[in-house]
Length: 530
Image (tube, rainbow, N blue to C red; front, side, top):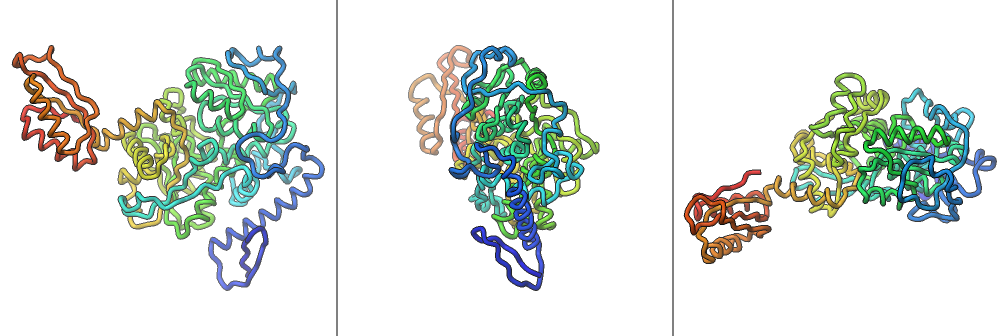
């Protein structure tokens, strides 16, 4: 038997006397790469347009910005078709085309077009070969993000490696599935364009990669979407239209525009193309961290990353534990696995903080993959997620949202004690946190971590007593964040006032020491519990 590996694009072989999953992975990837190269050379001569290459632009890998000229602007007479919008800008592309009835028909049949993957291929069950092919196709458009050893390892008694997918261009791992999905569209549909109706990471990824590949892209957002997110999506190159008071209204409007204009309506689905693209993350983690014991993923209703990556990891090493984590308030995946079918869609009533953690549940294919390849699904509290966000900000200097922090939250909360002393990779998959929400999350996390405390006490109205209180706080190295003195609503002595303080401490031990000292000095003190 021979061992194959790729070194700087040259395939070398040498005899070996044993096999292991890594060799199987190399052989499989090599075979998939060779097939893709052969198919590519056959197809490129007859159907690739001059302005687009399936893998890389001629000037190098896809990065920021746009290469070449942009198509002409949309005809102003057709703007009425899209809905009410006060900020319609130039550079919007559209064509009059016939209506297409089914999304599946918009992808090439793998039998007639070897370089494309059909949604209906393999009976909606992805294989490791599909993921290998996806990794080869998207390698020029996706960052290979680092998977680095974390300083948090010593605190929690395990070797933690953080897969930093928030370093992707749009701050989310969903770029992997989106790019492969767009590259798998037939050229006719690429010329017509695509349309999405959401304000989550999926729409951001579609906006960026569709613009990079000269595909007209429209994003329908509700009028309640934050201006910062609308601006961000426009900056990625999409035509953003504000329509409807709810996400449901935006989705209905997007579907109507898709039917009337021939656009492809995209949403997160568990088709083989999207799941294969997401599954490439599992391959990267296996390559970057040797001798892995477990990998922790965000789960929730959108379990495509968990399902696709689990297929890759279990193929490469069946002994690796694949663990999913979801919110205790929205245990959609656990409920769906228990029922054996997708659970109820509660995405319309969920706060923006859980935008990408919850949402409508994937169909039965992703659930079947999760049930077959995922070892465990655990839930964590909102408090655990907030503290996890704080730890990542302090130790990794990373501003992470709920979806990105939920995997580490399971470790912090002690939900996985069997991983003590083992080598564990945690996928930090998203970093799109809006500034107002970030401030609120950090303030709450500091309180939950017993590092911001509040107390009130009665002192004499003279300046001397308040000065003595401040001296005690300074001696104990407590940082005063806010102090307020109240006279009018005190029912005790006329010359007594109530002082309320909010102070910041180093940690839980420091907080307990400060509380004991203040209780000794002011027996009537009231300590505000969180």
